Image 1 (spheres, rainbow, N blue to C red):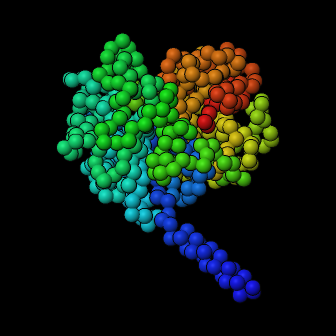
Image 2: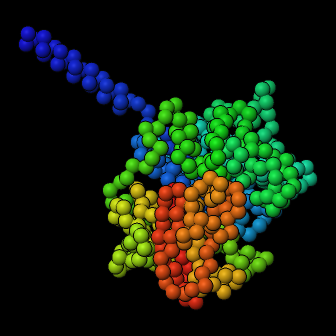
Length: 458
């Protein structure tokens, strides 16, 4: 009996060791490189990275790149200050992929891009050697057949469906007429009808009432797996829980354990402070985006009351950033809301209010604002922004300062910010709410060159 027990124990141990061996021999999860869209930043991928981490993806194998000049040129063939061409965009992506492969030792990466980011991914795979280094390509809301497709209309722009850039990318790759380059596996994610850049009417591109020549199916590609998610907007094709699930399932072949975000104790936060470019044609505007560091900018971080936005004491973090623009690291308290105060010469002192951070992130990028001449008549200015999606009055439950109608937000999912101009300079609480997320902040006097920003995370 003792021998039998020992034999069974030995057998169980052998099975356990075999199981452990099989686990150690399992290939590591592939690195994923995330590519943001036109005029955007790597910060938009924050919650997507959190969702991958919450499903066991190692943080060190998730890379969100930050293009220094994220805006496309008006004419892809002509230099334009502060903007990038399709060739420059591809070269930047290629260099970043090479860095990731070297850092991880992986032979291939997964690429996931939103909007214009998908253009760079397609170009890299088709023309930059990426077909040998990419296993999966996931394109959310990429205008693969153009934001407009009208013969003779702005065809030099990279978003023209009839232009040389997209025409070359969409040329058939085989006898079946596939538009994708093998052996890479391709996924596109699109909205059924709620993507502002896949519309038959030109409302969102300044051509209201005129046909664009594209449809809601414009982001699809022949030869790819094409997923349609009802009512999501242009950015939600990449940054929403539903888009995450589609991407995770496509890469792994199985559903994620959760679409949610598993909280982490003592999140460590970091990021860059970046500025705004100056338009040479109109230097007063200074509104176009870049992702260049803003050396010398100063940051103060305050813990705030979740209901009133009032500060709960002295600053918990201070820094004057150097040439790299990095403002951290800062260890946050779990469940604590914060105010980030950014000041720099030539900018308004910008008070940014955020919800509590669920997990650590190196993508907490901050940008001070400038006050437009048209807004100088206000006593206080409050911007309510949703970086990872748009405000849709027909779909979303939202309010700003107690009013359901957000100022400047039009019907449809096309506006990602609302600006509240107040006639009273008295400092008080102001609150923005969106589908259950609530951000409370304080108003600040425009006369002191100060503005408030309520920034949604989800």
